[in-house]
Image 1: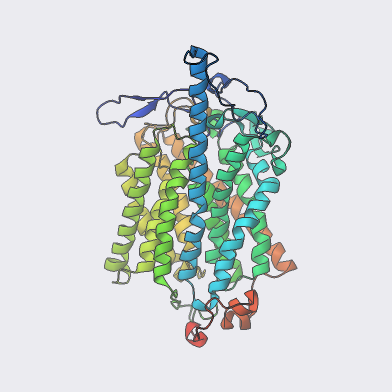
Image 2: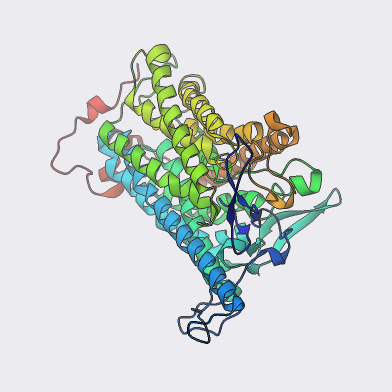
Length: 538
């Protein structure tokens, strides 16, 4: 996510010491991570304008110009500069959000390509409907729970109406648990800055919601999926998101307990990906493996996907959308760090793909498995998502390399040792590497960025750059995610199972879910050999 920076009107490139990248000076102060510890004066907002007929409010200013043609005053110039800066940030944030939304067909293609032909309509339909389902849940209450106590949206005009956080006092400190402003985007939340933040954060939530559809594919009842997706957008994602990005207690571990800058996650390795991966792990474990996945002696059978080209194309769509995911999380086109973020994202994806390919080729199967190439690239992208703004290029390459090897080993661990059937490797890609990305930030953050993050003075530094407490904060965040998301997912899955059931009937699973669940074949006019697609249990 999301840096919601409170920034000055003009940012200029500052010459850096030899060997260090140039940074924007002065560096922006994050407003999303804690309830406005940054001074309000840091927010450059144009002077209030007269109400405009379009119904926009405080988040935007009316067009400005000189009262005397050709003779602008210094105040008029400053107002125009401030308005233009906010406008640039608005456009950047919206375009980045559109890129992240386009990741949805990427997920749909990857998951469908890596599953069997008899389930394509069902798998595609889950990836399609999760978008409106999660969105509506996030609109009704998820956004309010996540950002209702945020404070100022600095980069989008300084709107500060999201100001009601439910807190508890513990150890003499105020700890935020969830927000209470912004339900239905109504009342004081009817503001252009809030709507811009909502769009960007909604597509992030959608990424979380769609991750479990791959791990639970080919045996998840569509009604159960329907209900569970609403819970992701209303409760599961927003609560943990509040703790990290909405001013909640994990973000204040630094200011309250002197643990670095609190739990830091720039664009969602924990908030988005690990959350989705933990949901996937719990769901796949509860549903049990697909019929024919394991022999009586416990040995697994491979169930190949039906369309590798589809999965490869989907992976490239995701890699493209990831530029919006990571670089867009500045919420500021005027933050020049976006170039570092984008390049780090590219490099980690490349080393992840190469590492997984070579690891499979030289060590695991003696073949360069195309599906694992895709998962390796995605693993690198997931891992770099948290630290992308805080590490140098060499660290980014190393983070991706480790992710590429880690995804292979976790796939074999989950499939062979834990006996959890994950058709697409979502647990390994998003769960394991979401955790690795957060820990990597606690190790490799080099102190070149993040001054004032979460209200803590100084830049973000990891263990290898002199701040072991930052690594502790990262560990706490990862452990909290696993416990909270795991427990709440378990409860919700159990409730849904008791009411409507989570798993389809065996006959439907053998036939394929397209006709029994969706009523239409995914590939009309093509005769599928369903018996060949389901390995016999020996």
